[in-house]
Length: 451
Image 1 (cartoon, rainbow, N blue to C red):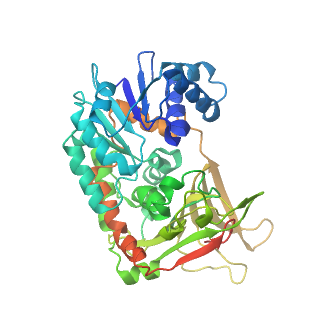
Image 2 (cartoon, rainbow, N blue to C red):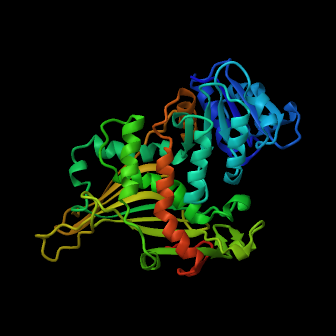
Image 3 (cartoon, rainbow, N blue to C red):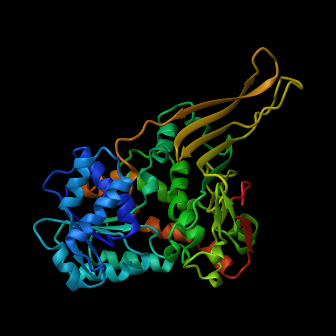
């Protein structure tokens, strides 16, 4: 297990909200000892004491209140260095030392190429690992180039392209529910499933992320970055094991089976929109184009929807709909598996049987199954819902990711060819949207209907 972590971009939102609390969780669970070394670096001209004060404030805000000693230990042990992430001279002293180091690029994706080149020139110790937060590149060509740069610095098994969605308990439970229950797997195909909907709709707006989001939009930020990964787990063939090679091979099979979209397909099967001024709960929200840091001329979408079909024996005839939107009236974050209706109802006119729907709630982590039964004391068909709430995991998603990185378990990391294949799936959509073949619709912030 590696016991040295360097975080580049350490004064940013990712370190504040996720990495520092994840390290605290690992420490609280006994995974990190006193010998663990944390080095944080960024362009900010801070002293070590100023950084520790900031880190304490972030841990107080984002980690459990009762972890007083744990939070104090994490912040107190952190070293801070001012550094340019694209300068080999600045990075060399950060990675120097005995034994391998894990370097986490908590940076804007545009800086990745320069940082990777600088790490190559900084002489990483043997066995070191490079961690990149997705999205991995901005399109297929940039992903191919990033893979080429990484291959010059470290072997593929030392590259961790992380996606915290894959570490969420419910996302992993999609596999568990399928593969550990005989009642589901025989039905997990197009003969029984009409549609799978993978949704991440949220009431949140930009929340200070305009600098990144306005250059990405909902399609890259959520659909390409996260929802395609969930699709892989939903649609993959049963792997021989959940080991690194078996799991990744089956995931890329899914991406390769996606039927390529033509321009006509994109026009019929995709939608994009952005929010106008409106009201969400008790707060007024300005139009996206008026948000601070937004360039209206970019025509960035805040809602994206894509329908895909898989050309495979198991899934031919099933529709997969991936969608994500911001500034909506309700949070809806789930995988909804919609089964086909039964072929015959022997109940006459006693009611209507809605198709069964199995829902995996991603946030909060729940599972519900909508069935049809007989109403109490009657012979009339009535809806019946079975529900369960997942037990809270001992580690947050980023805690599980960091533990995998330090232990060298790459099963939940995105392999290089998989990262490229994910871009291939959506390149036709990006191309058609850039040519305005699909209009940029608008919806009021706080909308409750589908955007």
